[in-house]
Image 1 (cartoon, one colour):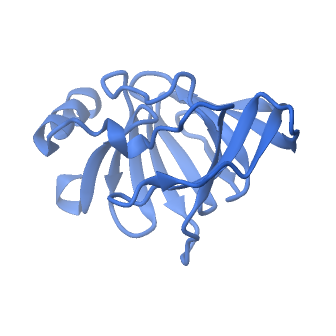
Image 2 (image 1 turned 135 degrees about the vertical axis):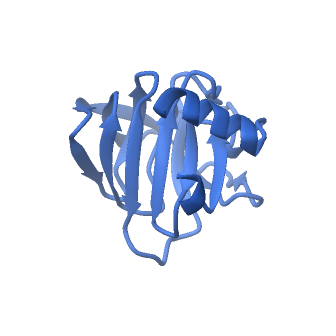
Length: 174
């Protein structure tokens, strides 16, 4: 894995991300990487993707975002390109409607479109192989957070050295 890695970092959604190329990633979910929010904030992506679960299991909760001026949540656009993290002014206040959830276990795959709002929780040691749809990718994804609470970019959780991250990965996977 090391020889194919372009970059490894802790991601504030509770996983180590290993970038293998422009469109491929390995994610290792571990309690050793602190989540920036608990539970994970509902979000979409700048790209559609397919994810193969190699070890462990994860749960995806799907949501519809309903615009509501009195809503308890706020929809914002965020830039999560490393080094240019930031968020926009709120797009609008909203409420969330659950569309259900699905559980994926080792040996299974799932796909999500870029505009699908979801949040993920995973068992310790869950390992996934993610393939992003081809570029170009828009600048922003969207995140739904509690109303009037600032968002925290997931890159802010990277307080590990490269060797520490490889040590965590190898301690779980190998």
